[in-house]
Image 1 (cartoon, rainbow, N blue to C red):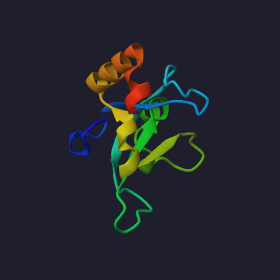
Image 2: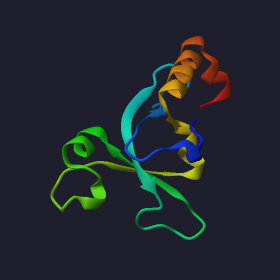
Image 3: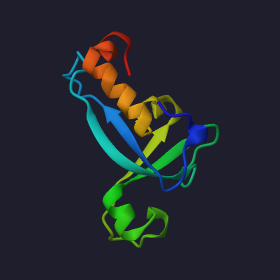
Image 4: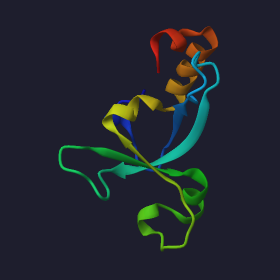
Length: 109
């Protein structure tokens, strides 16, 4: 898990999740995302949101905030309670080591 204060705009991070059927947490799904910013659009009072974008559209066109409609992109919005699924490269390595050792199945993500 990344400390939200350490997130840097335009840096890549990794969203790690497991499918519902993977009760042993043995098969992680890892998605590389680019951090775009915090509370950018449609924010609710008292509810912070962190915005991430898929790497291809970000590297091709830049931040979704400047993209015209019609440009395909994926934006992932993460709330405070889901930040535990976002890692920097060092955190991802630690997470994968825990998966390898079966630790996540006992402690959760």
